[in-house]
Amino acid sequence: MTYRRRASPLHAARAAVAGAYCLTLAVAAFATEHPLVLGALLVAVLGAGAGARVLGDLLRAGRVGLAIGLLLALINPFVASANGLTVVARLGSTAASR
Image (cartoon, rainbow, N blue to C red; front, side, top):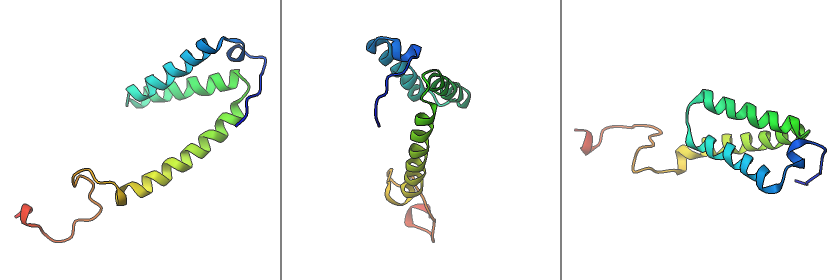
C-alpha cells in the first residue's frame, strides 16, 4: 500500500481531522450490529473513497479483507472453543443430556 497525494477534500484536510473522521466511522461500525447502520457506514466509506479518488484501491483492499474473513469463517468452527458453544456435529448422547 502506498500513499499518493490527490487533490481532494480528504487529502486537503489536516491529519488530525482526517484521522478523526476515519476513527468515527470505525468506532460506529464496531458499536452497532444493525444491518442498516452498517450499510450506511459502508456507503459513507465508499463515498469518501470515491471523493478522494481512491475507490479502486479501497475496493481492492475490501476484496482481500473479504477473502480473509471467509477463510476465518470456514476455519472458526473447527478450531474455536467457547466452552462447548460451537457444535459442529452432535453424535450420540452424553451423560449430561440424559
